[in-house]
Image (cartoon, rainbow, N blue to C red; front, side, top):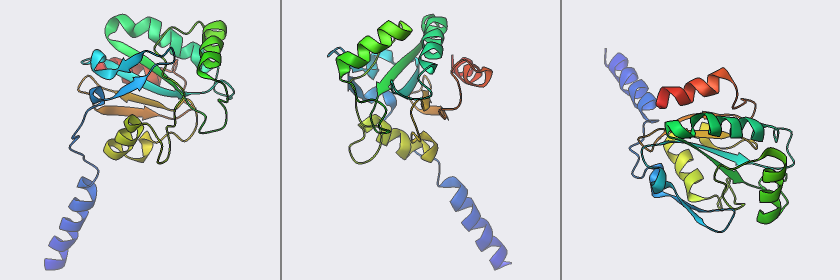
Amino acid sequence: MIKKYLFLIIMFGLFSMGSKTYAEIAYNFKFNGIDGKQINLADYENKVLVVVNVASRCGFTPQYSDLQKVWEDYKDKNVVIIGVPTNNFKQEPGSNKEIKDFCETNFNINFPMTEKIDVLGKNAHPFFKWARENYGNSAIPKWNFHKIIVGKDGKVANTFSSITKPSSEKFRKAIEKLI
């Protein structure tokens, strides 16, 4: 009988380890914008955020079109797309100006974009460290065009890998559920 209770206590402890208390929420973070202006996530409080690490020389780069479409379809419904250029996967060698020009010229991107930053490792932007600490390994980008969706409560609500297109029904339903 004692072994049974001990087993239940251990199992309960293992399953409850993933729940975090969120000492901070997403709206506490700031990024430097690709145009030099600051992107303060507090300006988007009570909105759904979709934070995507992006790159110009990636097989998933065509997802920029889908992200722009999601932005156009949902920006009036309190959804904000934020593109985060990174060279962590060696597919974004350009300068901030080159990245901005590429996005505007090829995809007419007009959603907020940060300057090029690290999303992995010890030099990762604090937002990405926070997402990992509070949501777990699925918040860690495994490749470019990894998507982190933050609910209106400022907590990570869902993540999607690079292979999930922003135009997919699964992705759009995840956003609509939070609106």
